[in-house]
Image (cartoon, rainbow, N blue to C red; front, top):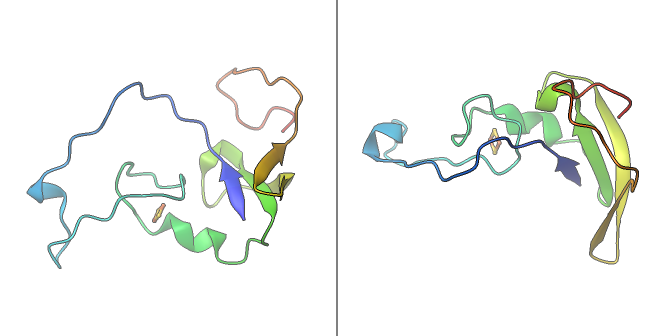
Length: 95
Ligand code: FES
């Protein structure tokens, strides 16, 4: 299981204690689907049934968006579709 996400930020996010949850911990999103990046918002639950070895793309990088397979992980390398992709602000375009 893996997924493609589009990041537009060009620098780090600075976190502090105000980002901590009720338990005092800061949960950083690692699935790429959070609407509250860099913080986890629970969107990772959408990945629970992803199959091992498959690379997915969620429409608009939204956990509620359509999920489709875009490649596979082969021998530790991510063999994602090799076609060149245009960045047009619409993640739905022929992906
Ligand atoms: S790890 Fe990405 S939303 Fe939780």
